[in-house]
Image (tube, rainbow, N blue to C red; front, side, top):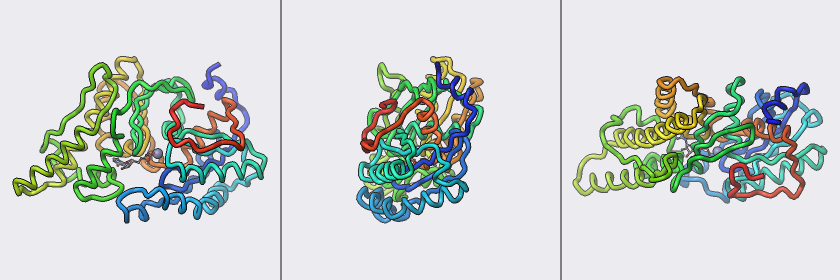
Length: 349
Ligand code: KG4
Ligand code: ZN
């Protein structure tokens, strides 16, 4: 039986305490029935890592240790739920920075053991996809999902809750990684995505024609290293010719190239596979130009588009609570031997 059908038959409320610590946010949330967020506490380390121009793994782990107990306490308090009332502990166990992941996993195991609650390990990217279930109560599989984060760029068919078929992936940089690298090159600093998004509004997206990669025999695959190199070449050439660098035009033209590739391939896949629902997930799904272009493309083709609000696009624990709920219903239970898996694959159990 599809999980979709089981979900409809559930008559008891399930409360998940979720923990996320895979990168630079220490987060905890309480989520009811996978869709209703009772609390969503995020302690961001961005200001700290900005000093170094990117995430420093060792610092991230130490900060998670410092913050995690407080963040969990706040999440339970804000939700007005006691630990006894929680049905299961959901935790991200991969992919991500191993030291950072370990803090959340160790904490979740300790709570699970002490409070005698089932432990459900969650794939971070499956969490990103599940953020859509929180924001759109009516959304049910099957649908196509474009996952665009700092570490991943995937086009997947969500066949059922927790059941994914990857149909496209990046051959090199992830979309968010390209945003961060280009932002650094034009002196915007970390994290680059939101800064490029903002600066691009002042620039002309047609000023510079940056390349879009076409990958033979893999129409839904992506490549962003070419556009990143083209930006670096443009900067070098301006410097050599002593021409003024227009950072807003570069930001807008780079963003246009990335957005164009993401939208074109997603719409092509939706059309080929006859899927009338498209969702977006991950930090780059917060990008305003991507949202606008995908919205326009979907409208033209009669496709319904879903994406979470920006706070649920970037890392948070509510999305982990949503994914953990469907794993919990599926019967997934992890033991105290659960380990952090930095390169955990989508759909790997
Ligand atoms: O999903 P996420 O929070 O963390 C990972 O799982 O990687 O994604 C972070 C990425 C970063 O690369 C960040 O620059 C990018 O998402 N990002 C954006 C925007 N907001 C965050 N990229 C483009 N436009 C944005 N508004
Ligand atoms: Zn993420």
